Image (tube, rainbow, N blue to C red):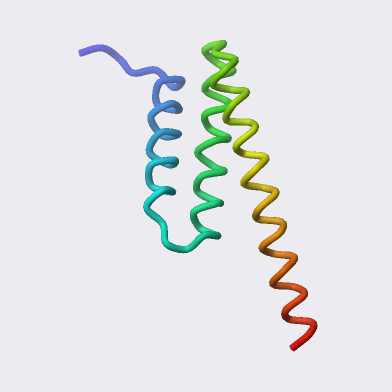
Length: 82
């Protein structure tokens, strides 16, 4: 049996995180899990020098952050008006 290295484990963890995120009903949890999976994929892509993997996942991570900021700002504004 071959030894699995840390980089491979990182790729598997990233895949699992993204897959689990897509099963969430709660959009905030979906965004956080997807962001985490994307961040792991960025590290994985960088480690194996797969720049399209790193670049695309960095872009998706930024999209997740954008939407999370929007969600949290809307919640803050709703709390102020209540």
